[in-house]
Length: 305
Ligand SMILES: [Zn+2]
Ligand SMILES: [Zn+2]
Image 1 (tube, rainbow, N blue to C red):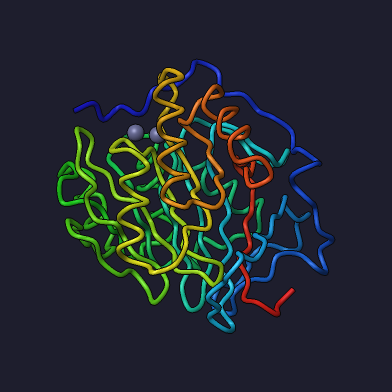
Image 2 (image 1 turned 60 degrees about the vertical axis):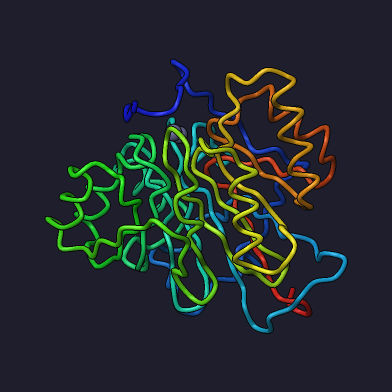
């Protein structure tokens, strides 16, 4: 198994924010943050923020707001951030802040989090999608700054990564089957395939959200598993979809499969590839969200702003 990383271009591109898609809110009305996730840095300019529209028949959990912020990606939609090949996403929710994947460079991860006003000390759990270095390389540096976390990784991960967690004094949980990580977050468990991988599933007021590292086992497998864990529509699929080298036939098939599964919107990035991203944009229309480091998705209960 290759642990060096997902197929990586020589020079990651940095793209500016797309003003048509990423509305920048003034600081006073910026992203509502969960009460248990204090922000450390002094009022940086707000990153691009997107609020998911209500679904046709939302199942509302009053009072719950979830905020997802992409903190590591090979493109950046916020000029203050460093783009680098890899993926990482911070999820702030009631009583817990999760970090899903760490990118490959912990310095970039922590710098980007600081620039976004995200406090590394508020993170209480790290979920690692798969063992590729562009998702796990930042782990050791992060643990040096905050070892008071539980790290969820597949049981098949290399012993070296497990040792990194134990030596830092963090708590290691080896995942095989799907499991709850908090009242509103689940691991899909091992989705199988040549590169074992888990995805993160969030139970939100607007439907479930599936956060994917690379989707080596196929993003449809993650979505199907999410539907067994959370009995809501799949509101958003976010992250790497590993279609960088896929041909048009395969890309079309993946899109059709997600649409058949009822996926409402997609925010692909990282290893999805430009060709696949334009195909997704065409297929999903207004429900396509551009993503990259600095993109923020806020999911609020009905009746909240
Ligand atoms: Zn990757
Ligand atoms: Zn990978």
